[in-house]
Length: 199
Ligand SMILES: [Zn+2]
Image (cartoon, rainbow, N blue to C red; front, side):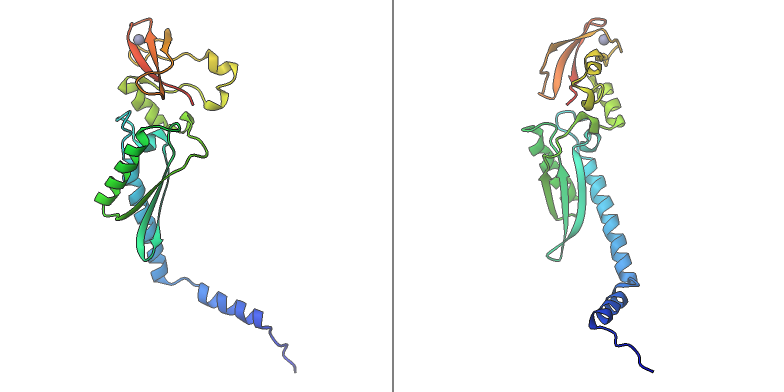
């Protein structure tokens, strides 16, 4: 009886299967550690506050895009991606600095913060929690969605006064305390307030 000769590539493929599966316990433990470290790094980065609106974290704002922990040259390396609220936002340098500071204080020695410009940040990325905190702080949160800003729906939306809740408000200036915000005035309580523009 003749047994067919197995090709070299078949044997190689078998070898690969043997070495790759099953995964060793230490490999799984190491994956678990990586996940835990990534979670820890993300929690720390997510707690960094926005210098312009200090009640909001960069996570509330949607500025924090990604946190990855991997190994580089045998060292633990943390990469944090942030997207500025608008190009040239001066707060980004402060945010970058605060992220590095917070992570190094927690024992992450090798931290890289990358500025990711595309896709561009939109107020749609702001969390519901962030919108609520913004209103409590006295800034009218962005209303509507960036996707409909060109349409008639956007124009029909009124900005609600964060102090008395009235919709009887008007824009005083396209630019408030920062370029992200417009200055509004409430006709009901007569208070001026900032409105975080939809972008
Ligand atoms: Zn009011």
